[in-house]
Image (tube, rainbow, N blue to C red):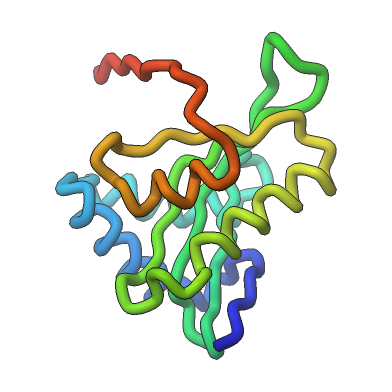
Length: 147
């Protein structure tokens, strides 16, 4: 099995939407279709900080990350925020998630970004095992006000 990580391409849209639907179902959330459409468009908008990387296994897209970069007040460079990472259930446990994370770490180093950060559900033990192999939780608690 060969895992290849690359930037998203317009022809990935149909498969990404399948994976995106699986991601939302996993977290038992709904996102308005116009938000999904806007997310896809922003990936290819040069003015947007959002980027997508995809994992192909033997030529089929089996996972993705959505991230964005931003300035910070405690650093000189940019932060990279990993907002979404999803691997098709059929490809889990086969190194796809690790390949996606390794790719982000490499991108951060290559681009001179200062930090890579993310959050996940406390109950997502599979993802947490992967993430803990990179760094332990820093103990911060997330707060969110939705308008």
